[in-house]
Image (tube, rainbow, N blue to C red; front, side):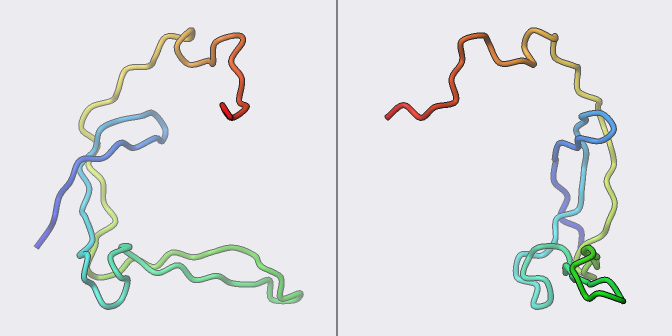
Length: 88
């Protein structure tokens, strides 16, 4: 049984999409939808990346529904005089 939910995709343009939700009580992935496997470089053994294996309780599909409008340029930037220092 599929558990469909709405989400926002960000690539190549932001859009609303329907996706399948993994089972929260799955014994294999613990509700993550898949299992991440780290692997190393064959010669040096250093970390080389991560592979993602999808769990059978979830599918790897997304159905984009509606592209979201772009924000005006003046809304995408932080205003002048903004500080990233904490208030305390």
